[in-house]
Image (tube, rainbow over the protein chains, first blue to last red):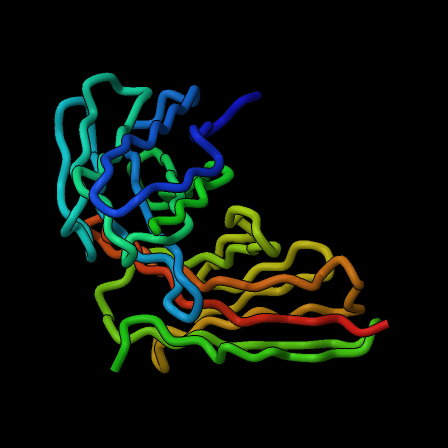
Length: 113
Length: 109
């Protein structure tokens, strides 16, 4: 079972470059999320989506854009990367409801020089 | 007060000992509670949900105290493989989910 798959696993960017992180889930989940995790900061929600074609801002959305054109995919874009965006990015998916257990991808380690 | 607070640790515990840590939350409009486990350089994974009546899964026991707004995790007969960061997670009725920053646990041989 693939679950939640993130690509790429690692990436190094120069300041000002753009890139897209891809998240794909095969569990038919309605909800998808993008988090970043930095030392001492815990997981912080960037953007999330409650269904195909809908997205919403999380706690730290600035500098990022997202799209959910297909239910199984959630894309995170960095239009002009900055060193402050160096982080580990996790995608997660879940079903709505009381439990709303989140399943995470393995993460993308991004360095912006 | 932060929405979800945890003691960052680290808790250094000898193998075989019992260890417990708490997590406090500030918003009473919370609906569900969870403990996730995150190994070094890995993704978080669900350890267990926390039910109002308390629940046990093998060596792990989770409890909820709504009056005092905290949840707890107890690990008995700790193993080296229990070394990880334990994340407290609170879900609200509007589906908002807040992760604590985690408590680091080191089991010593």
